[in-house]
Length: 146
Image 1 (cartoon, rainbow, N blue to C red):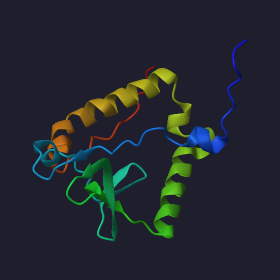
Image 2: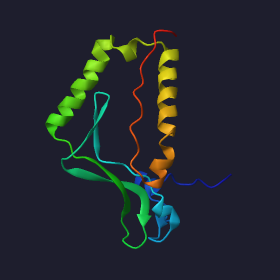
Image 3: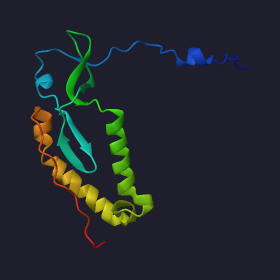
Image 4: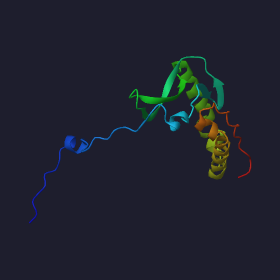
């Protein structure tokens, strides 16, 4: 008969058996120079607008080997509670209690809209990868056909 192996405690089970170092990149690494750019702008109600208020850094999960800190790849607006309410109200208006254009679209129309958005976004891919501020994707409008 095989010997019984004791069941580990939750703490024992959650403790890693090996320590993994985080991914890192040196300051001179060409890949660091190609980091994406996340520009500081506000996107509410389907509209992109410039942001002149305070910003919060957006970081990569990749660490800078010299500083030991996560690499900063851009910034996002540090929006106020009023800005957050504006965003929630815009989302609620778009939803319109389930009667808005998006929730009323057929699945095929939503898929087509997302594919169109991805197509527009792909046009800015290289600029984002190279760190140049991307142009805003063209608005996606639904068509009446399905």
